[in-house]
Amino acid sequence: MTAVFTNRRRSQRLFLQIPVVVEWQLANKSECSEKAQTVVVNARGALVELGVSLDTGQRVLLRNVRSN
Image (tube, rainbow, N blue to C red; front, side, top):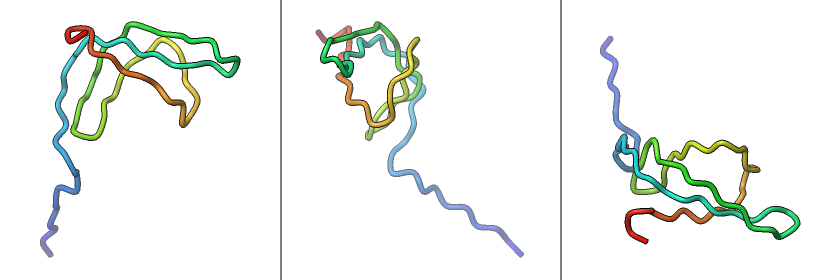
């Protein structure tokens, strides 16, 4: 029997380290930000390594340091 594998990804992963600033709001409405960098980027999002944990579903603003 021959196994057939298909690529089910909707977009290609790119392993890129791009400097970014991640901004978010705490439950008490105070704003926080952290300098970080991407690990993986694709057409639908990015994996960013942060020094803090965010809540699941937490909205963030991601700014590219080089374009701002």
